[in-house]
Amino acid sequence: KHPRFLSDVNGDGLPDVVGFGDDGVMVALNNGDSFDMETEWLGDLGYNSGWMVEKHPRFLSDVNGDGLPDIVGFGDEGVMVALNNGDSFDTETEWLGRLGYNSGWRVDKHPRFLSDVNGDGLPDVVGFGDDGVMVALNNGD
Image (cartoon, rainbow, N blue to C red):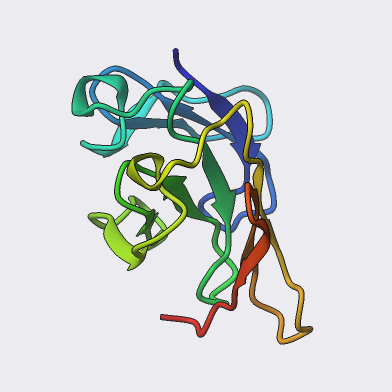
């Protein structure tokens, strides 16, 4: 119900805990000795907003090349991105109107990944669907 990741979200070189909770995205920063108390970095993309593990995979990846991991979520309508500004995530925007749940993409049947397939340094979307492999190149915005 609540996926969690380890990723350096504030650029200090230490892995932080990022969790997708009921009400949004919570982050517990790593202070070198332990993790600080979690704080909300985004009030969306959580379970109460309709984001469910069984329908909507979410990843952390630097999609705009600024060195900070952003949120990439495969929602009902397509690929949503919430950019990381160093102390929170900006409101998510749609980057691609495909590869979403309402287009027939299922977690258990259609894996989707982020990988730099063209060597430009930005992660691209790769999906394995009923009709074969779909690639959406990242243009950075």
